[in-house]
Amino acid sequence: MNLFSRISLHSNRLTSSQKRIVQFLQASAGEALTLPINKLAERCQVGDATIIRFYRLLGYDNYSMFRIALSRETEEHDMRPIYEEVDSQDGLDAIIHKVIHSSIQGIADLEQQLSPVALERIAHRLRHAAFIHVIGLGASGVVAQDVMHKLMRLGLKVNAYTDSHLMTIAATVAQPQEVFFAVCHSGETTDIIRTLELAREQGCYTCALTGYMNSSITRLAGDYLLSCTRETKMRSDAMISRIVQLVVIDILYVRLALQIGAEATDRVNQSRIALKQLRGGTGSK
Image 1: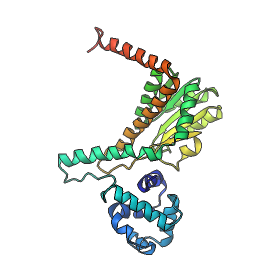
Image 2 (image 1 turned 180 degrees about the vertical axis):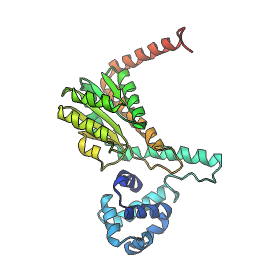
Image 3 (image 1 turned 90 degrees about the vertical axis):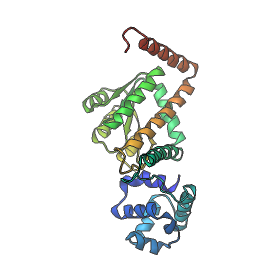
Image 4 (image 1 turned 45 degrees about the vertical axis):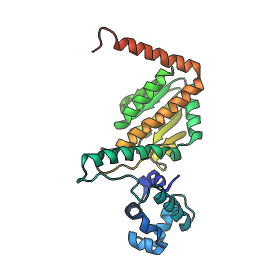
């Protein structure tokens, strides 16, 4: 996993001092490559020990490994910001370029974030579940609805809950052979966490799609998928993360469809025919 993907996955746990390191790396990656650890600490206005804790948090054993990772990052992106900020002075052409390319980069980062092992386990559990409960609140509720839509077309028994009371009731009366799939970007939404806790108490398998490696939901769920992106100040809240989450769901959907085989293809085709007839009916507008 590249350096900035690792930073994004841990960004919810960074201290204010560590955030200053990130800001310096984003603004002056080329300069950072030339600095010994004590000089980097000075430029970031932190102590040497803070730099050490920072790169160890990201999974690098020593400063040399950290600098190699930074070097690869800057070479790959030609010394440009990984996610270009939209500036108030930007014209429409620049806005189009930056928004599109930051979204593309967010999707490309998924290859280094997604665990094939977790994907396989979640797909297996969903396929064999007696019933699937998908939960999400706010913007994550939109993604939860998309999960329901896709799994339903495969013939799986599924419902999506975007209301805290309904998901709590569902978890309270659930049976052990049922599955709870949570969509929660922050990994810290209280009602989502509580629902998964209730589901686990009932003996249900729990899984999640989230944006941060070290969050409450990753410690609670049986398996989880990561879809971390770096939001930019001029974008609407969690905009890129929603796009990336939908891509993850599509990957999971395709994997399930292939596992189910011809039966899944038949079900998808049947739903397409039914919807086409509905759109072509006299009541359509």
